[in-house]
Image (cartoon, rainbow, N blue to C red; front, side, top):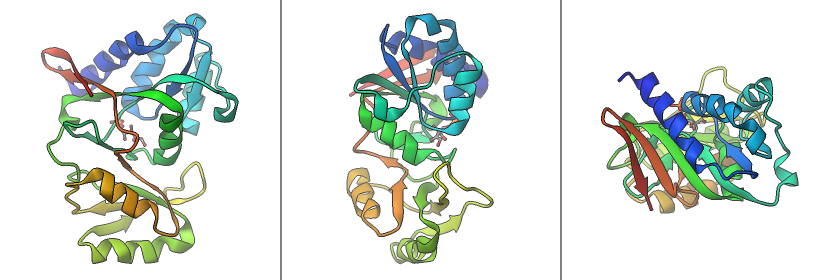
Length: 219
Ligand SMILES: O=C(CO)[C@H](O)[C@H](O)COP(=O)(O)O
């Protein structure tokens, strides 16, 4: 199976995790786009979606799925999103699509994070994929210096402004052996909006697309 076929496979499998009658938290990315297309087929059985990006909002609305304001929703049983990397404990790197902050907000509202990913995303240690960090523009150089001091190699993502009007630093060369500790450390630097480590908001379930079908990892 191609990577696109694996994405379609897990996008379909995620429908089983949607709670009928509820609002669904929806992530961002090419795997989530497959999920949104499947969600449209059962749109009459859900109360709507809370979206993690303008791109996902556009796709949801184009398919007739109502998008609700995150502040108007009290209960979100499930959040479904992809990942750039996921480790064997359910911690992830996210933000390849620059939507990490809104993704973390919606994940935080939700009771369960269901990660959908093709098998290439499963890793032993996070950090081969450069860590995306959303930063307030006036702090970008200072934050880059802090990453260099810890052995990382940061670069500003060219031409990218997030949905929140900020910049993305992609940090290469970090071996993330303690995701929770590094997430907590980076997130308290002045000017960091959030970093793309999802350890506090890690996955409860991962639907992994493999050549043998969907493999379910649960924590
Ligand atoms: O974090 C994300 C966007 O900010 C995506 O979930 C991540 O980049 C995976 O994307 P894809 O499904 O296209 O591989």
